[in-house]
Image (tube, rainbow, N blue to C red):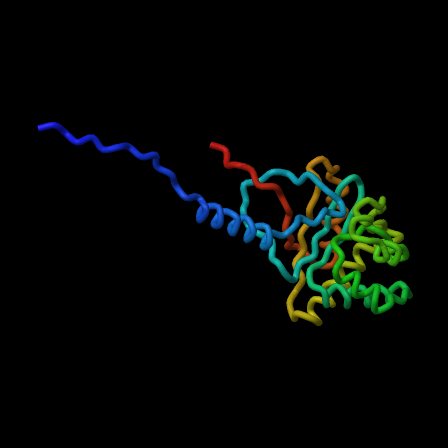
Length: 203
């Protein structure tokens, strides 16, 4: 008996649904992603295998690189109160608008006398500005005052002790790091974090 041959038909897959899913995923990732904010003082941190994360609140970060020191503080209300205390200390009056802008800023590295100029700049211009760093000399140790007033402001607003993190450049000379550590120890701050970059474990 002769076999009946069936005609072969070309198969086709409708990719419409797959394209819809792909574009939905792409849209989701674009809308939920956060842009990386440029650092005021980019540093190349030393490598480490430690994976402990820094806290999101109650934190002050001291960045050291190229012989300069930059200061950053978490929490808008804490930043405002700290600026108010620093203004009282140095006899500088900041406007409410300046305080609001300062609350949204990233780290800064200028003497407090020049801070209003940095606050008035756009975020993109601040990163390009040649900020000389926060003074930390014995005759004008503004870094000590920033740390001291930040601790007061954090306790007033959050009823917690401020935690300190030092983010130093891997190529920075040790005496510059030690100066900052000495300032912390003068205020009885003997526990602080050192920010490092993550590297693979050695086997």
